[in-house]
Image (cartoon, rainbow, N blue to C red):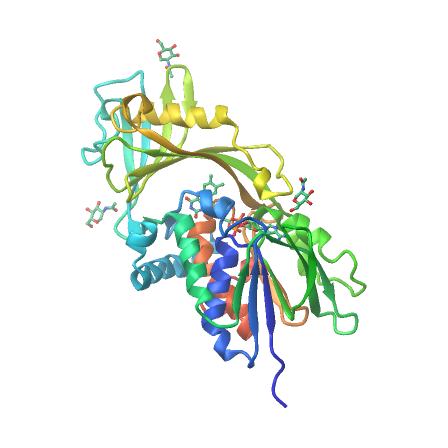
Length: 389
Ligand SMILES: Cc1cc2nc3c(=O)[nH]c(=O)nc-3n(C[C@H](O)[C@H](O)[C@H](O)COP(=O)(O)OP(=O)(O)OC[C@H]3O[C@@H](n4cnc5c(N)ncnc54)[C@H](O)[C@@H]3O)c2cc1C
Ligand SMILES: *[C@@H]1O[C@H](CO)[C@@H](O)[C@H](O)[C@H]1NC(C)=O
Ligand SMILES: *[C@@H]1O[C@H](CO)[C@@H](O)[C@H](O)[C@H]1NC(C)=O
Ligand SMILES: *[C@@H]1O[C@H](CO)[C@@H](O)[C@H](O)[C@H]1NC(C)=O
């Protein structure tokens, strides 16, 4: 008798779900004949939420013990993917020098690093190197996620269902293994889909989903759902500004004082001449639907003001710089441990990959790789993720 086909469903088309889809598409030929791979994304396209609005800064060795090994794997995979698919042109992959910059508009005659010619150096009271020489890099996240999705779709048996929400899942009462899921499209029509494996990669929505998905199931729920239920979100704002002239390959972690104000925006110059600027998070509760996330324009105006103070010649909208995006998104936060949850078991066929907080792009592709190993091999060999399971 031949082994029965696997029907793997992924909930969520952010970087975690799509990276899982990508690496699973590479392993699909090793699964029993007729196996399929389906990804469901509630939004209109992949990466509508944090994975499309994130900074895309990548750090090799800035991580705690729980994620250090995964970060090393993922940092290397980012480089390999960029080499294989021309990531420099397609999603702005490059190595960057990363600086900590203290800026004080009340002090002058200070001197910033000479190479950083787009920052107002006379108010830089100190700066130090945080990364470089292959330890920090960057990507533009949305085109990266879209590219991985398009590569996965080239494999037969792989599908992506946009504007389609996973609304329920059912376990087999006898075996306790996932049996089918219910999906709802934008017109409200519902369909049951046979699933032998279910990967929940719903970012900040993971907690709510883990609590609601199995509401009609009679079988005992696997304990790994308890960890998933603790994953929620925290809102943060960002802007993208097209500078009036080119910038250098620098990412800045700032500490600014100007007038009677203080702020600490992160400022990432990108390959395409735009600069991404993001600020701290606030307490506004996560809406049920991604499409209902709207930025508070007072928060983005502050970021635009800080950009002009830091870079009066290049990032000043009064002097030719252009605002390309004002946006908000939610960091997926695991209340339990603060670390991502990457776990699953072959018995239930349920896998969780979420809660990456401010490192989901750095850790995203590596997470996809270890999820693939969990699903196809039942164990992870590429990185030590024991503290995340
Ligand atoms: C302002 C900001 C800046 C950041 N900067 C960086 C950075 O520089 N470097 C870095 O490494 N990380 C950064 N991050 C963190 C990173 O963006 C996130 O950790 C990462 O994008 C999370 O990816 P995800 O796939 O888990 O979640 P998401 O991108 O939120 O994707 C989850 C998806 O699931 C979908 N979904 C939810 N429920 C359902 C359902 N029932 N059915 C179908 N689909 C569903 C949602 O629509 C969504 O698209 C930043 C985050 C923010 C907010
Ligand atoms: C890179 O290495 C060189 C030589 O070891 C060193 O002088 C320089 O400071 C390093 N730069 C960074 C950003 O670490
Ligand atoms: C900077 O100077 C202004 C005007 O003199 C003053 O109001 C403000 O408090 C000073 N800010 C700091 C951080 O010292
Ligand atoms: C979210 O969207 C679905 C349809 O996609 C809709 O039925 C639901 O009411 C929306 N939720 C809210 C809070 O608007």
